[in-house]
Amino acid sequence: MKITHQYSEEILEKKQQIEEYHASNIKKTKALCKELVHIGELLEDENLLGFAYHYLALSYHFENKFQKFQEALVIGLKYQLRASDSELLARTYNVLGATAVFSTNNSQAMDYFITALRYAKKDNHREIIGIINGNIGNVYRELADYQKALDYLQLSLADIDLNPTTFVKQMDLTILYSNMAFTLLDLGEIEEAYYWYRKITFDIIHRDIQIALYIFEIRYFHLIGETKKSGQKLQQLLIFLEPGDFSWISYDDILFLCRFLQESGNVDALLQILSSLDRILKQSNLTKFKLQFLDYKIFCYEEKNWQPKLVAAYAAHYKLSKQLEKEVEESLRKDIHLREELEAIRNEHQQIQSENLLLLEKSRQDFLTSLPNREWAEEQMVLLYLNAIKHQTSMAIEVLDIDNFKCFNDTLGHQHGDRYLLMLAGLLDEMNDEDVFCARQGGDEFVILYRNKTTQEILAIAERLRQNVIQLSMIESEDHQLPMTISQGICHFTPSGDKTIVDYYQLADKALYTVKKRQKNDIYLTQG
Image (tube, rainbow, N blue to C red; front, side):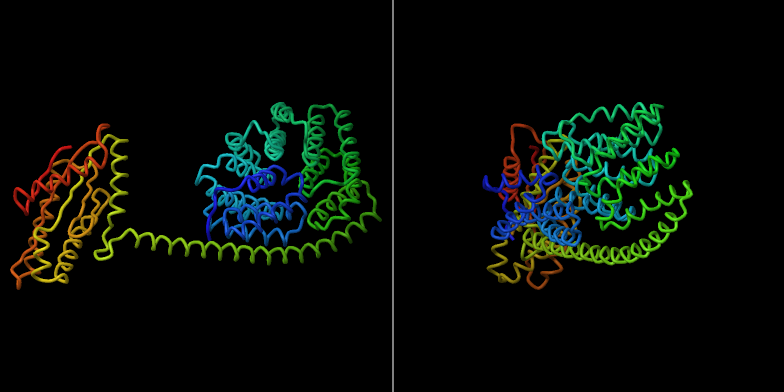
């Protein structure tokens, strides 16, 4: 597929709207994503398709349409891998991690988050690194390892945008500040927790975040002994929960509040919270949360000794437990299928990469000798030159050719000439290592690049090659009495600002011309 990076203003505007509003206007986001999918298919643009399917998947996720979410995410992942889009790959695996946390599969969540970090760090996408570290912190908080959670949240602070200009970025920062505040409360650092709570100053706050802030205030005022204020905040939360228009994201926060009320022995307040959730939970298909909230109801009924309600709650608990078992089995099947799909995508991508690398390597090899070709040699020459400038080290360029090569071809035929080329190439290939690079320039001309070697070391290597050529060619050419020899011109230098790599190459070429004119089968080295 083609990869298009120069987009029209219309496409750029659609992408910007999706990025800015995907968390606040799901209907509009879905419509824009579907438009970009259509455009991406017409343009055969893998980057655009990877982008569109990623945000389409997020839209389905917010709507709790997990089957469609998974399908869109997998399609997007395929395009992102093909386009080598490290940013979107990091975001996609981060979403997979967050979904695994929701399914209480923290081990798998960590696998996804670590993969996300690897992609994010590849091209230093700092903001995404910050978001992922924040999510890892939340995993540790759920596991009650609050110090480890705080460590990751502090790592997140180092990378996330602290001056957000969009709703989504404001949400990211608000969630981070909120998680910092809650984690510090869990650690008993009450005043420091309040400091982070006070940093949440944005005018527009999502309802789910507002619920989290109410819960913080309830806990905070209780811990500092202001029980009246804590009770007032609880009543405000109950009123706020009445419309029921909050997402599953808030359930975890409310569960934390229930645990807090249980531990503090505030059974009446806990019953009020659970009662306010009855209607919302009945409309929900999230069995896991229904069961968790039912556990708190059973606790309350036992504390109040409400036997009839307790019996009914136990019966409901049994029924929900069986239902959850089935859902967990189904979720496990879907998860295995997803992981198989992801593994198949990775394998396909690795196969494509291997084939591309093989094609690239072949395109950089000389067809006859399999040595690096002229293009590869020029690339290495520039890289070596830039490295020598950076570290102020020396390098050398050697240009060599076979003496009287035209005579070999005319006298013995091109087949024999090719044999001599292959023989010399074999010797040069044995010399290739991290400090010596040998390539065929074309015809009977070859080039050798030396990295950070002394004049004596270079001359010793060049002389050994010259002797090996004579020795090997004598064996190969006994019947023809035409032993092969080579002439070698070398320029040894430490790069200075007044010469380019081309200048130094020309000095090596002139050195070869000098030795050919003076005496073939010899070496001439000049200092650049």
